[in-house]
Length: 352
Image (cartoon, rainbow, N blue to C red; front, side, top):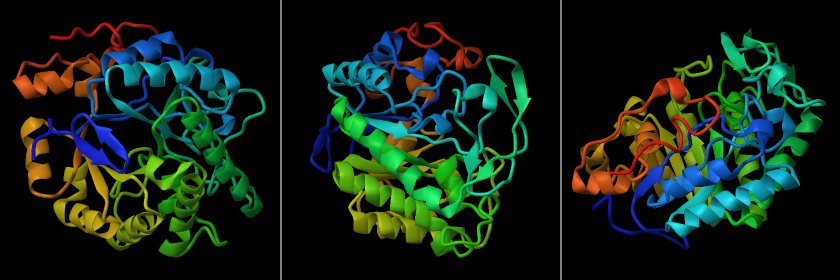
């Protein structure tokens, strides 16, 4: 099967099997999507599917400087321009909803927001704040059990906002050490209620969020990103239950009928677990991490995945599908501009 053939993702017809992976780019001053962002996504709309940068479902989820949210009218209006720009080039577009949980600093949050997580466990390391540069990550406040329902409703409201703004669906960020994975992981979840302890309890929040969003906007409009063995953001990257835990998650998402599961760093996860996740889920699987054309096609041809996601290669090459198909050389990315404001290193990469 070719990367360049159309693919049916539920009721959506993708123009190819190439996915633009979600990438935080910190180009939303005031946490509101803007015309520059619409230009950026429009430039990359030859993808089959675009998954946006991580987008906060609530003020508490705005972990990084200048990342967008989708909980206000102004934000929804900004996103409307982004969806329209992606669709003009033929891409389908899902908004990634990312609540950062403990990975934030008060200087990156708006007035009235607070740092909350499954447990009061700080992550090691520092993060950038525009106000005061690098700052140590603080200890979060642990959610009370009764607060969790409200957090789930924040995801639901943001999902409805995304669909109303013209998006084809949403991706829940259950990877890379953010809130959903903080519930999943033994190092960050030390709860003793129904959301902690056993792997079934640690899976509960992810499944309840997915179920609530799927009920609100449709399971065919709901995907989720997962990162077994992840160590980013100071997560415990290896414990014996991981294969069984993620197979159980995949089976639950399959029963919900979600559109896809998106596995990060699939080579690190390993073929046995990727295959087990795909079998348990029984629907579309996206892989991401270290891919080129040959690796992506080999994984698809081997039945390991259905779609292949590219990150920095898509940042640096707005016409990536054409370059891959015609075997054209790729622009190199410029890491020093990944998170800087403005068009440099964002919309100024040239097409072939």
